Amino acid sequence: MSFHGTQRGYSFEFFPPKTDASRQRLAKTVQKLAPLRPSFVSVTFGAGGSTREGSFQTASEILRTTSLDVTPHLSCIGSTREQLTEQLDTYRAIGVKRVVALRGDVPEAEAQLPRAFAYANELVEFIRDYGGFEISVAAYPEFHPEAQSPEADVANFVRKARAGATEAITQYFYSNDTYYRFLDWVQRLGIEIPIVPGIMPLTDFKQVERFSKFCGAEIPAWIRKRMHALEGDARGQEELGIELASRQAEELLRSGVPGLHFYTLNRAEPTLRVCHSLGLSDAAAHAPTQPSAN
Ligand code: FAD
Image (cartoon, rainbow, N blue to C red; front, side, top):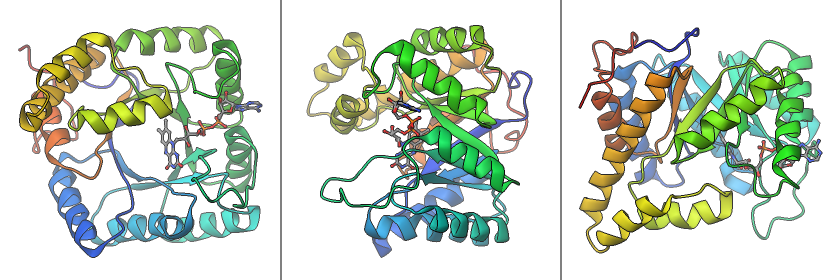
């Protein structure tokens, strides 16, 4: 099955490693995932301290050592407009063609960070006016936790898309219906950019459960119950997480999504296994095939 109407395909997200050991682990992860020939890999941006430089270093390291397209994330928080311009200059110079434009979050204990813009839509306009980059933005099928209402959040998303975004990547979700409803809503408002589902295999249930409370992504009760039944069996939970992500991605592919974005948490195995279960072998990677029927 090819992705409907786009050349977008798969993308894999990494975060900047902080230690030598985790840098080496990420290099191995990238090596293992590269043969799947993703449309691009993205590197998150941390507004606080060392992670700011880490994003650039990780992006340039992947560009230097592979033939992958790299998409760095940029955020309104943690940079001034001048610094954003410098980042764009540098990214353009090293061959980056796409960025993910975000508002970002203020890390605890770093309330005094520079903030070039209040909201992502202004950053999108800024990058559009700078020129030369495809611009991805974030979308929230279950709505952003700070939004005044679902309607306000959707209106803000529409504003961000109209500001010049060329695609959106969703927050992870575990109920595909929330994605279909969100898609339907924004399409009725005239938004036609590809909205690519973000997939987070539930390999570390406790960690994702904690993070989900913060980011507003719901873990359905039936999944929580199945995970709780495997409490103490980390391997069993991981197997279940990979199985669920495979089924979820398969259904999304059948529904005609424009691509799939994997939150890898810098690990290769879960994403590799989900992609293989979809029929995406290393050899056939750039021409995604029909998901397997089982
Ligand atoms: P916005 O689109 O600006 O929205 C933020 C909130 O403000 C929403 O509630 C929205 O409804 C509201 N809002 C938007 N515009 C307006 C307006 N004009 N007036 C009033 N209210 C408005 N975080 C990181 O720190 N680094 C990363 O690398 C990173 N990568 C991510 C990648 C993806 C695919 C996703 C889905 C999220 C990522 N995040 C990342 C998390 C993201 O930064 C947070 O969710 C953040 O709180 C919101 O960012 P945003 O770009 O969606 O913000």
